[in-house]
Image (cartoon, rainbow, N blue to C red; front, side, top):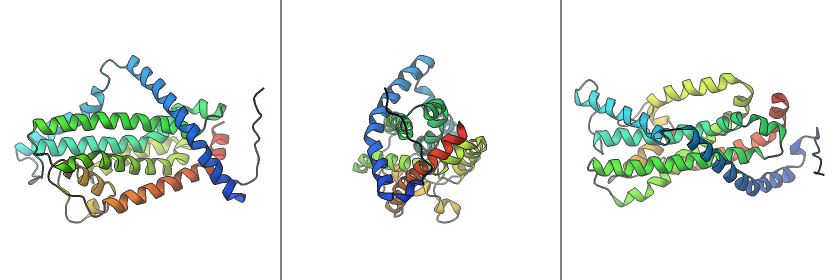
Length: 274
């Protein structure tokens, strides 16, 4: 017989040390289960899709073609960029996709696995980690394509290109932090998912994806800007924004706090979901 699960109305923070120890104890188990879920989802996705990973690249390729055409015809005046303009747009689009995919991953994974999270004892972290592995794989594919495309566009690579994966990891960290913050409400209300889709569309235009980051304005207070701009500049002979490390450190702290908050909210969320 399996050991029964004890459900108590006692607030979890009456024993803060026990709460933190339980949270840390779930992580190793979640990693192993998350890896298994990732492999199963990967096999299922390969069976269901004929074009596979081409869908990861199609939006960025289409945006690059359109933006390059508009810029070449002087329909939109962008100004000079550190990289060739086509490479500038492609890098911005691929890095933006990495961020948005990480932001959506927690809510998407738990929404898809709703029955598992309400009817089994699998840690919710395992389901989220399975999605994070998928984000990492997709990000690695995008970076490999970006490196090949940048070489084709004639970009003069600098040693800082070795830091590009670090920048992509920082974007994933920031996306996960935002994703975990909105997760409890996103599971309870479908409106949150629709708001995310609208919000990221507006957010896209406030992020220097296809244009240079201006000296001031809303773009400069956008936390994605220093991470995306720095990562793209590392492809060529560029440097990091001064805000790169503070934003990355803040994202890491927010991710931990949001994760602990979700663990507190989890019993109430599961009870509401039924």
